[in-house]
Image (cartoon, rainbow, N blue to C red; front, side, top):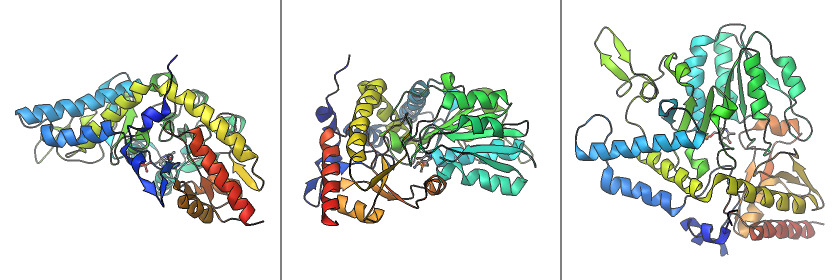
Length: 407
Ligand code: PMP
């Protein structure tokens, strides 16, 4: 198979020439955002230097170049998710905006008092708050799938929550706080069997494993470009084409219309239907370059490499006296959340920063799942394909040193 040369790949990322407190940067905050390869940075620069124009409207050379670049990125996104059609790919600001779009369009239009929405205990606030807001406004019931002590979804409890009032199941494919990989295909199948629509939050999965919306058969799938080595401010909402075209638009304005009079407006079908106004053209193009970059390495190669690294790191962390790993499911990706007895989580983060290691210490915008495990915050190292065993060793050695410092 493919031999993965991590040191060579790392050289594609200019940020790894940075030093922090005199040490080479060790980026273990990938669940928050990922670093960008030169290929992505260069592509954005190229757009502004050679292609910059608004799209669709004007009939001149640069408009054509910008449109080709933007629609090319849509096709790359389609292939990346294995969607049937480019019409199913809507560019948005990120996963948060994608979920809000579904809540404020399909949800507002189709859900009524007494209807039920199911989320899991693992969700990021972005997949809780929009549904809670909608529930409060419309008299819906928000129900929560519990997890076991390893942080995995309890399918048997989920089955009990499903009923004829269930109209939507919205859940994450990978937990940003624990790293749990949920049994997504099964969750989708069970929801559909109950007659509910399903949204899959792919924010934490797309950079670690193959995404296939047709195999998953979800109704919507969302992700953020910045978590898959692309720019901030761009993301994707995938939706099944017939569903998108029977959902009323959200924002109104230019680009999303076929015809406007003062009496009446005719809307385009998807994707333009949901892309009112001038979008984030350059960063969509940058996202396209990020997808090319991931494809060049190969998402399956990435998956296997990261799996080995996660097993290696988990084995070492587990043995550190006083360190409690939170999230110990069989099936995990990237994330290793922990608390460390004599230390506050912020203290651990600050100590790691002293040797150049970036991790997040906090609630990770997923307070309900941390509280499920009796904590308010954790230290959260999270891996990507450019991390090495040496990165892990430095993390582990530093934690051992901290432990000896406070006996
Ligand atoms: N869902 C999950 C699982 C996430 O990890 C995140 C980002 N931490 C989001 C949604 C929201 O993504 P964004 O902030 O890029 O919109």
